[in-house]
Image (cartoon, rainbow, N blue to C red; front, side, top):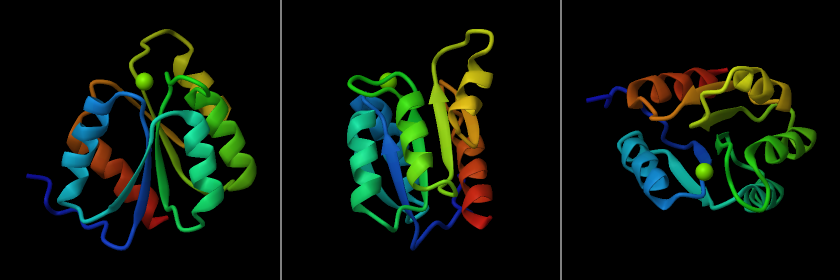
Length: 128
Ligand SMILES: [Mg+2]
C-alpha cells in the first residue's frame, strides 16, 4: 500500500523526540526511497538545517524538549523561508492550528498520523 509515492533524491528531516514515533515515520517513508534525517528535539533540528543545505522538507513535532516545534519552526523559517515544514501534534486544543500556522508551518497533521494523508501532503510540497 501507498507504494505509488517516490521521493528518491529527496531529503526529509524528521524532528521528533519520541523514538517510537520516529520509527513509525521511518517505516512509512522507507518505501518512498526518501533520505531521512532524525533530530530528537527542536534545537538539533535548527542545527541540522544550518549544517545541511540540501534538506527538502521537515516533519516537525510540536511538543519536544529543549526547543519546541513552534520555536524551531520560527528560527528555521528565518533561515530558509521556502523550506516546507509540516507540523504534527497530539494537541487537540482550540486555536492550536492557528498557533502552528502563525509559527510559520506550511501545514499541519494531528496525531495519530494517518499514513496516506501524510504521504499525500509530503508529495504535494515536494512538487511545489
Ligand atoms: Mg513530542
